[in-house]
Image 1: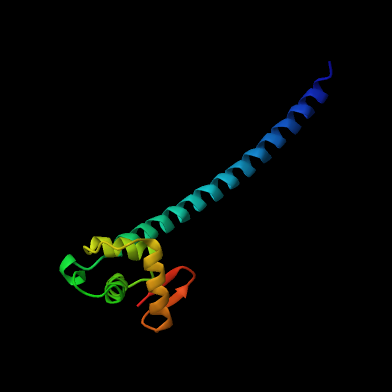
Image 2: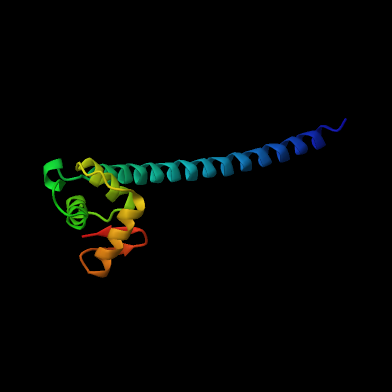
Amino acid sequence: MNFKDDVARLDEEIDALENELIQGKARLAGLVAQRASLSKDLAAYSDQQQRVAAPTVTELNGIPRTDAIVEVLRAAGTPMSIRQVWDGLKAGGRDEQGYQVIASTLNLLLQSSRVTRPSRGRYAA
């Protein structure tokens, strides 16, 4: 039994474990920072989704679909997806035919320059 060799082997194992610990702490710090960033983004996204307000029922009833869609987009103040526009119309008391009808109407409004498409799948007025 050689004590010097045993001590040297233990020193090497300790050094290796200390290095793993340092790397683990750095990885943990990175993951914590990434989670904090994603949590912040999620909170901002949730706030944005909640701000997508629909006009009241009386504002949307009795007006043409094109005007109602423009009104929903203006009330939101932020670009909306087709699904969000559809939800806004429903919240405003309109019983629209469905997603495809809203998509087609948005395309018509886009061609007539009454709405814009600032990014793929998003519309604004």
